[in-house]
Length: 114
Image 1: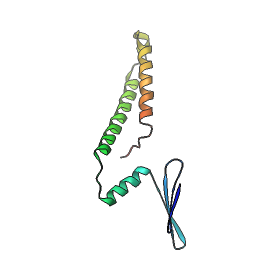
Image 2: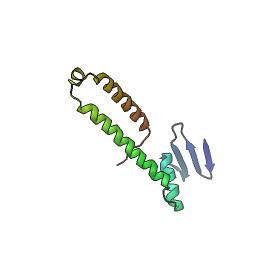
Image 3: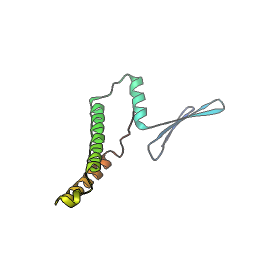
Image 4: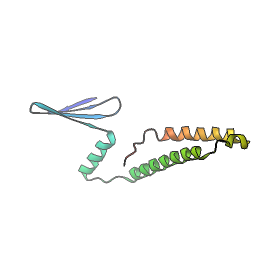
């Protein structure tokens, strides 16, 4: 999608990146934005504060990232002889692997900042 507004061209890549290009004299100035960056700029300029939903989404993202870290920590803390000494070790490892795959998928699109 491309939008032309006077000397400003706005386009959106297949991956969602928003590209702003403006012809300034002989030079072309380009800015590439993630959709969330554009939303934040628009809200700030319009004087809008983040919504309750925005805060909830950020909290959920933070919690999902923490879940992934904890699952990875558990896997790293298990001793090597666990499978040999525990009768349910293979089932536990299967559960842990499934939980890890689900958690990784849930956080796949979360951008880690700071």
